[in-house]
Length: 374
Length: 175
Image (cartoon, rainbow over all chains, first blue to last red; front, side, top):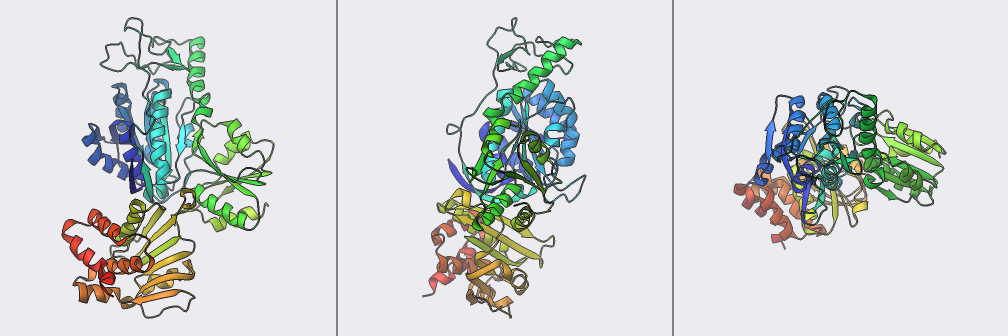
């Protein structure tokens, strides 16, 4: 275990190395670039490779290729770069390729205010790619969480054979914090399931555990089919409804059924509360302070900070805020994740508190908005 | 506990804040979050570091100072700009060399010519930040001074370590 004083971006890079990262490909973009810079310096010391490509499209495709060579692989980007990666993310979804994308959000749309923060891309992070499935999204609000969730992102990607988005923003990227860095041996590190069957019996897309197939990599001696067309368990193109149904439901279920296992949050004062604040990422810091200010005035306000945004564990969230009469969803955008929560919390009033701010939303402003509803 | 450090670009505000934050993180059991603000220009603009320090991780819950318990102001402009972020009863360290108008507040003020001390007694105007940091550490004892010196050695380029440590020790060597 090491203790250091580092930024959110450095925490992601450090944790990726501990998780076993062996290949990073990327194209620089503010505010994610220092992840790239840090890894360019440090990853080769740990037997890994870092390469800058001509753009984000090449970068994510290289990451997919590296993962199929059995290297744990990642990239980091921000909104405009993630948009370019979307097509390849669909490829990673249908080919069930484990990889991690650190998505450091900035003020958008487009070039917006590239050095400043916002949470405008929370829906795009999971719904942006084509094909109508879900990929896990984890959201950090401090450098410590960035560290812990990066390790978790790699674990989830390996366990479920899926791209995973680690979502932060410009604020977390450059906030310093005390980070307790647990090392290998002190952490659970999950590796993808490799085939135990002999090569002539191996079916590359036959699930072996909870909808997830074993993954043979290039060089393992197996016939490795990385098939982007609708495929059967052998990996052969099969343009048939029955095959499409089976594949879609398996790809969907393997993520959604894992929701309870992936659920990660921190809760303060939710038991017996009248009002619950739900937030995520950097805005959760503002929400926690605002809740504290209201508690000091006698209101029974609890906070739920979600660290897993997707898949959504509906029962888990419902249970946590069950005593609240009203739920406030606080975020630094026009009120996006609110739509998800409104859909699952149908038995109570859910109020969107969208506060657009280039910095952290001010707790005082949250208090002023929320007070109209108390 | 909230600590605000503010001055003009070029006064070493970010280095001061980083060394203090790092020393607290690595050499105490306290939790800490810290944020930096600096202007696009290299010199002259606003430079500010906010540190939020707590015994429990969940209490280091914000990265901006709401009401500072301790503040360092190295210049009049930032003293004027951020004086309302400092709570009554706070310990406030002000560089007398760069300020003329100290607001009438219910603070415990330490008004010392950090920049003049750095220039005339240490021999390098650039280490005024470490003179101020030494004063803050001597008065508050947030971190053992040895821990700060270790941090200076970690962070500062080798050829500048000695002069920074000399500046940091200025108030410790005074009786």
